[in-house]
Length: 326
Ligand code: AHG
Ligand code: MN
Ligand code: MN
Image 1: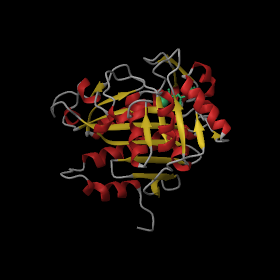
Image 2: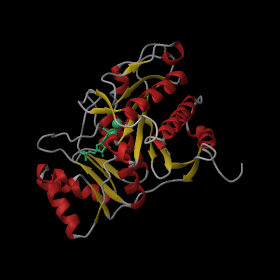
Image 3: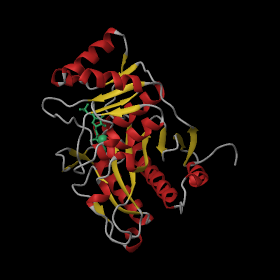
Image 4: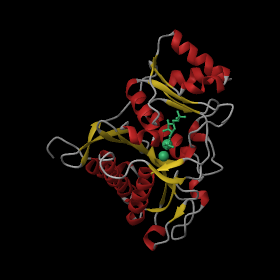
């Protein structure tokens, strides 16, 4: 049409990328895009309506849930359940995965793991937050209920991964293994429009992003890396919303570090719905994601909320960190 490609048009055009595709994955991606617009609407008025602040509950990981965490979780669950392409969903906000019992969902071919609202601590202070998602083909039989096995697949099995950034403008970025494309939400027409086609990240970047409050709790190799970043006058940037930190580094070149610490040897970030989808994207953009020793996407998960140390971004920077951790 008039010189813009909307997310929906793009997804339909790209359906031919998948041999034997029936359109289910395309529909699923559109459902996620649609649900994210509802979340975006609430995020945009968070200070005006009674949606900011704590929900008064904790999630399985003992973290305070914010009202928007709970809201976003419900919106995505509803959208995916009514879509019928997905037989179950695992989310940061729920202890166990949810197996959709309605008939159309039981016939769904996919499962989704997601962080419905990433960067919760930034909601109340008007700083960028996000959504992260990962899509797998189910292992269990079509027609039955989703099983744990459907979710505990390594990242290499992802059929799609992506994120939504609710920032100064909102963006949806995703990959299905054929490169990375980014779409900016035009609020005047309510559509995501292709704005960043074929995203690539630099092999070497200038930015390093870590919560340096954890410096003394970190491995000597990490301390050495941070010292060297300072000696080399690299740029320190840390928002505290993984999606926002990742997105900036993807575009500008850089590395994000969330290492294991003495009190949390596996770090903080969750493999299934934080690390894997962004690892898929960064690799498709020419970058790298590692736990310091192993490629993130090759880790075989043992549990839904498993954490792992995370180093993601420009290839040479991640490799330098791996070298220092040996
Ligand atoms: P979530 O809000 O989904 O729980 O994720 C928060 C994560 C991530 O977004 C961010 O990069 C990291 O926690 C920040 O942790 P620190 O406050 O320890 O730096
Ligand atoms: Mn998160
Ligand atoms: Mn979250």
